[in-house]
Amino acid sequence: MRLIGDETCPLPDDPVLAATARALNETGHWAEIVGPDWHQVYMTDDTRRMYGGGTELAPYALGARAYGPETVEVQMAWRGGQFPLEMLRRALEIWGPWMLADKAGGREELRRCVDRRLRDVVDGLEPVELVSAESVDFVGIYTAAGAPIPVSVVVTRLRNGAGEVAGTLFLYKPAVGMAVLTRITGIGDPRHFERIAAVTKPGRRPAAILFADLESSSSLARRMSTSAYFRLVRRLARAADQSVIDAGGLVGSHAGDGFVAFFLANHAGSESGAAAAGIRASRVINAALEGVAARSELEAADVVVRYGLHWGANLYVGQIATGGRTEVTALGDQVNEAARIEACATGGRTLASKDLMERLGSDDAAELGIDLDRTEYTTLANLTTATEKARRDAPAIAVCEV
Image (cartoon, rainbow, N blue to C red; front, side, top):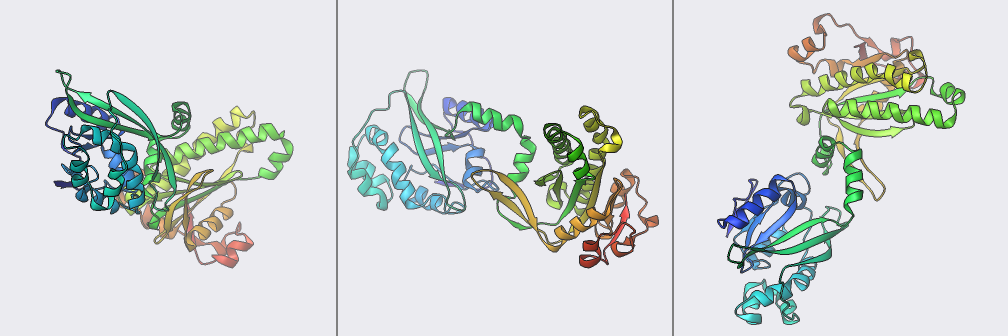
């Protein structure tokens, strides 16, 4: 047995298995291949990333017997307890009849190969020949919270030029139709999905925070028909989200005609990069407003957005996933402070805190046209546009217009 860590599995020696493994890995499939005697020969990166909680490649016992003691030990240690013994027992009940039919030594040979805690499952199996392919629906536990995930599996034989079995392929997918998956993919941006996956496990993550809100929304909502106002908000949300994604950020919550975004330092490569990304995103959103207004048959002056940027040195950032939605959120005093900054940025201005501005390196500042040495700041309490909440909750935060 060879335990594969954070590197991609080596391709199998058999040319048929190697070609299959390469194609499946390059196309991002969930798949695993076992050899003729049911030893593990390949698992794709995306499968291992799923078993690794979405943030790392789970270890893989290359060459170990399926459901053998080495394999069971490795799988039960996968992140989040995703493969408890009871689930492995259920899996062996499904795949076991085919394994039993393949074992030259029959039931006793299979009992010797599997983990001792699974031997009673073998005693209840009856051999079934897997001639070509079969489909199976299976419920696996793949989340750190133990949430059951229905999975559809196609199990198929891989044969060499002589028609001999070279291995068995397990091809997995979520148990929803491709039309639904296509719809989800078509709506979302794969780059954003990858960033969301990276924050599946909540943790402390320094980041730039962007709050934005449509000014005079109440008067606009009264003036426009409800359907027209809805289309305006939808266009604004789409333009804002795309700007955030293109800048390397994470889209946070939407509340009516306002939204939040986060730009993580580890995604941007540095604190300077994250701060610059937040400023850049606010500018791109602002540039898109004229088009949003035109498509809504409004004047540009009717669609004004105010922006507040702040730095969160110790934000607790993570993903909240429910049956109805998946959302990135962050907790920390700086989130509330960013909201106070944004509320003071009336007239379509962008106000950035001194904490954020002083994260900017000279190269990023120059690219944005910002002279850090000449930048002057004003505390929120001293702004003529300061709100009551800003004076109460964050009066000493220094900001400038960018």
